[in-house]
Length: 403
Image (cartoon, rainbow, N blue to C red; front, side, top):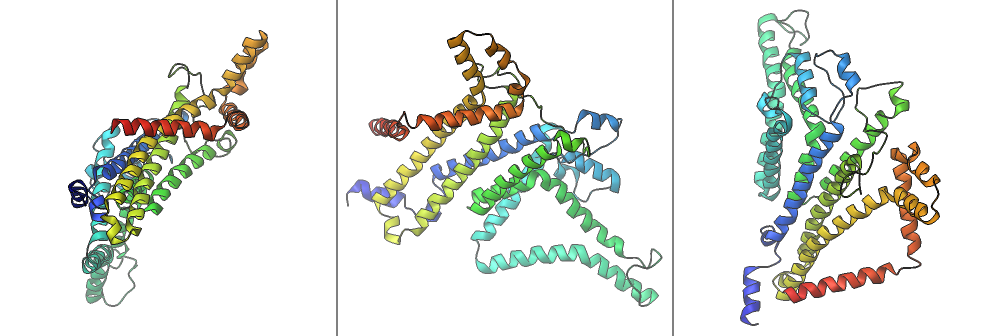
């Protein structure tokens, strides 16, 4: 073994404890975390408002609709109950705009750190943490109720805890834990997927990663169903529907419309979050399955390095390509009509292009489907695998010349 290989082996191995400190692994985790936080912010912007008619019907008083936003529901709940268990600074109620998200996010990070520490701690420490947590919650929830009941029994004799007078009724002592659970539900509307995502990214849990993605997709689907015109005519919950018309493509050189860009951002951020988070877990799983000697072998180290480097490059390149092709797919109807109009020179193309059906959202879905059909048909003309292989080979050669 020469000096260079010895240096590689000493400074870097494929042990899990060493990989967790590698900047490339941390970089992928930071990308996934940033995508998760940006996704949460974009979801709030798109799905966090109540409809204007619903707001006007309350004439300035506090209101709540099941939108993707937490402060409105907590303010409404505080007005109904008179108080909240957690202070406003924890809920973010003392701030406005994006600043209202800072304190709950810090709380999510603290909980994630404690959870990861629990996973990596010794067995006796894990048991003590679980016992303290469960015991503390039970003591807070039941101890005041039991103590007040026992004191009343010693003063007034044996009785059930729900007597006719205040001295004999002790159920009010259970009210605060119930309020706390309801507050967590309101906070969880927005921050449960963030907490799950952070735990999945930094705790290396694929199940939590996919749960977060499933949660966001469920929110989007439920919002679409509840704001469908046929549903709102029967039951209007006050949600603000997305515009039915996708709008004119005015951004990025006439490639996408503002609504299309917002929806694309949600999709791309979700893909980046999943792809980068899953990549870390896959690489860690690969390293954990290697035998002890192979983890310190310079050749395995180089191969692992190349895989991680290639994934980072592919992550940026593939996501950019996905965004571009999605934008083209959504505007494929305009491209077809413009092409036919240029060839035939007829006036009907302009009339078709301005039709309401093509401007509606489902018209863009049809346009994307046409794009997929055309691309799938072109595989019989263009050898896509050979083309992508040539691009990848050129990219590898370019990287090798740089190194």
